[in-house]
Image (tube, rainbow, N blue to C red; front, side, top):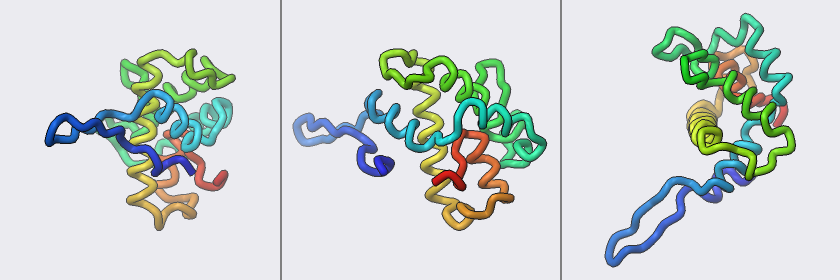
Length: 139
């Protein structure tokens, strides 16, 4: 898996090292690796009652399920997948990349912290990951 191989690029400037965000291609590769549900699968999941059972966010909706005014969460992932079904990297907007970066960060952090729930398909952890497009049963 590509997940842990390229977290930050480092640039040396004299005696200090500056870490920058992941480059666009790395974000796209990691997004493709982590988001293993199709747009159809994710949309169907988000319509199920179970999808509301993940960890709750500040909006009262489940994290990843949010329908906030900027369309963050699983619904935004569905739009990204539908807008660019061929996964052509030049067809992603800067806003897509920003959201993909958020998805990658959330999924990687969540998977690392919740390893014990990885195979419990009825846990809040599993539901939340599915809201972000990651189905642990597909690995």
